[in-house]
Length: 148
Image (tube, rainbow, N blue to C red; front, top):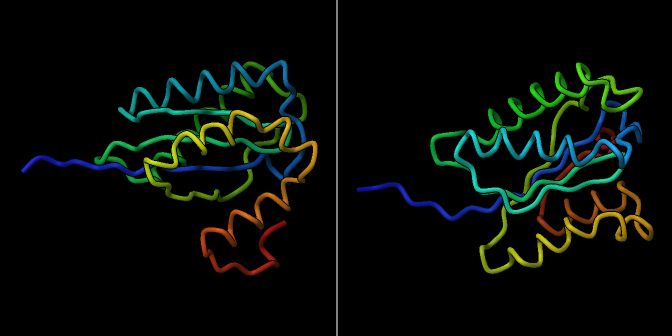
């Protein structure tokens, strides 16, 4: 039997200490670089976007790759790229950890639009508010001591 999957992941992470260092001018280069990593790992990329203090990815992950390994590889490679190209002043690496949520394929358009409109969204909502809402909406139990 062949392997078939339909799992859309919404992945989020932040720069170290959630510093708002991802200047708009460099984000496209970062997002294109991450896109390349995902494509090289046979993942289907639906959308990558973010603001100064965090990024979002909507992707399907190839069945041969674990989510944790994928995120680790992206964070390591993109962190090295940012530092070697001096893409973002003050970049000290990525925050430890990440958030990942699954979505139905039928809700993909909603997720892509949500990620696409991050700049507008964050004129009204902080990252912390957004993150808490996502954790609650997806039924993730968390210890508030480890959120900041």
